[in-house]
Image 1 (tube, helix red, strand yellow):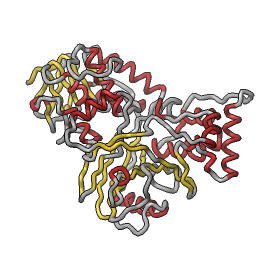
Image 2: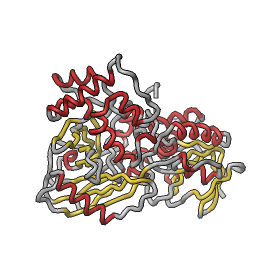
Image 3: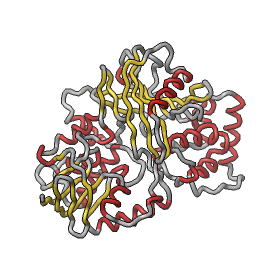
Image 4: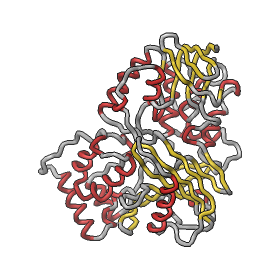
Length: 431
């Protein structure tokens, strides 16, 4: 038995950020079920290719957070990239975001999109309801833009009918535009967004996890130790190796998993999600250049997005990540999907004569939480119940939300501050 002031469960970005905010002087332990830190920010190096579990390209609102991380990546080359992203639409590559660049479509399709958008935004048009994500899209963007890109693409991502999601399911990450934006973009292109530029270390996303972990005393991190059960009444967490008594517990495991381990009654149907199969693929020669992301709404293609690591690293061989969304309960036949990916990459014109020479895959489960009005309400209710026992759930999956890695760091810092534990890591006073 170990007694500890603060028990942190999960050594992904959120858990490591919580521990880093405490520093080396407080009594805490961080437990991680895997053999290495990083969570979904792990990096794979294979045959000269550097891949992450998925595409984690960092963008920061807070300069002090970015600088703090950079200061702890001594000797690591960090590239700053101006994003080049496109939508693949019937053989045409349209600048992203699609809804702001409809003038790049064939003339008749552009007119359809423009008229529908105008009517949707006209004060003389009867406003459609916006009780879910799909209704929000039709109400604000009209039928043409919604059905050509916004609906098919996002349904491929979330692997569900968008009517199942809350209208604000993507929060600030959805690129909203108005009619003026579309007209202005026809004359003077401005596709800026929250991640118009991003930074990326040559060592991969794991370098950010390592930077956070540099603040930990080695004995505070316990790898390959999974929490199996949490007794709230006695404030005890049990693992296969023993048990920990805590004053407070900070968890970044998926929220429904935490509820099960704590024995909290809940309706599991409230917290649904998808899972994503990611293929990392290395080829012997270069492919398309001057592109970092390609969004693919075409339902005949298995993947919804392709990322180009080689154009970030300025490497001589094409290096891709390819993402495919599945319902949570789907059985994934990896080899069949692999064959389909290679076929669809050729159909998209991404692969031609290049030969595949290295590969890796991972299944992210959960991947994207299905954010609904019910999941938001239940998360708030159940989180309040857990907090009575000194248990706090943080991070993308701990909050069952959609957020950035920087958001995770800020949230962890704020929680530690509210608990009176943040002793190090001076950031902007507004963080």
